[in-house]
Image 1 (spheres, rainbow, N blue to C red):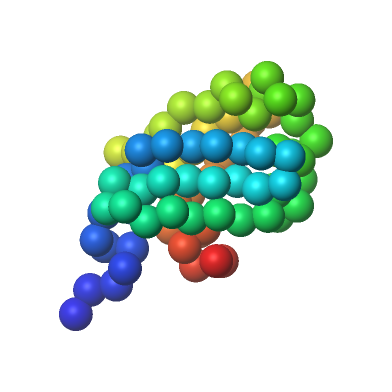
Image 2: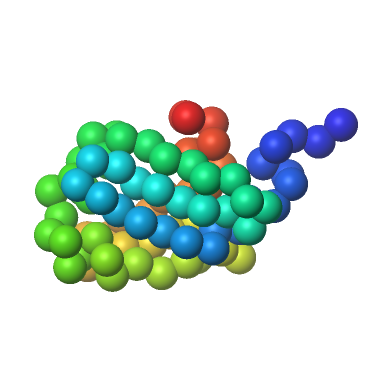
Length: 79
């Protein structure tokens, strides 16, 4: 039997609010974590937070302006 992270953890949407990091995955799951878990993103400007790109076959997110990476697998383990 597989784990949930094996279903399809590709990211299709990323949103960073004042309080949370929110991802929508290809399989329909929505993952959200408090922004306080990511101090670099928490202190980044709105423009820096909005400047992201998908990495690793869409299984991670990178913010180049603040050199921050977040993997979907780590969010699923922490949530």
